[in-house]
Image 1 (cartoon, rainbow, N blue to C red):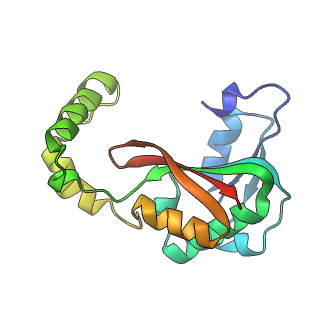
Image 2 (image 1 turned 90 degrees about the vertical axis):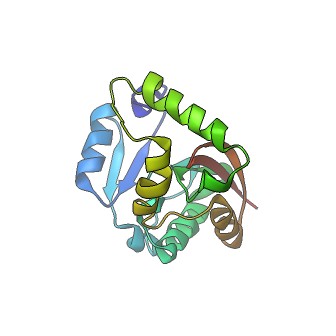
Image 3 (image 1 turned 45 degrees about the horizontal axis):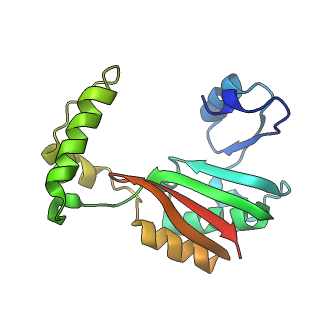
Amino acid sequence: PVLSRLPEDTEATGIDGNQAMLQLCHSNCPKLDTHEVDFKDLETFDIGQFEHIYSVQALHEVDDDTKRIVFDFAHRSTKPNGAFYILDRFHYDASNSKFLEDYKGIWHFVTSELNRDHVNNLSWEDYNAGYLEAKLDHARKEQDYIRLLTSCGFQAEILYKLFNRSLIVARPC
């Protein structure tokens, strides 16, 4: 949906290792220039530089070495005044938080009120205890991303957080 809202004169390029994902993006933005590239092959992939680069819900699926490859690629491919945005799932366990009751309340609101069409019957306890642990795959803490982005030549900061989802912005130093 985001791609379908781009201004008419916007040029957009999609890179993914999954052809089905690229086709889905192209259906939302027919003028999208797509490239099927495995993330590990980004070490040698050169496509020029962009004002903005976005990674959405992808990096928790790849190991730390591949994250570094993606971050190095993003650093090479971001114009000097541009930005690299990462929206992803991060490792976070709120069970010891002094705001645990707030997390539970917001979780209930989000799952019952905002997700009416997308039913999610997980309680906060089930989500935090079981599902969260099962879904950690290669998720890391936001600060791990900040450190890795910094080592790749970026300045980075967390702009937004909701439960275990965060938006990080990184700009070339």
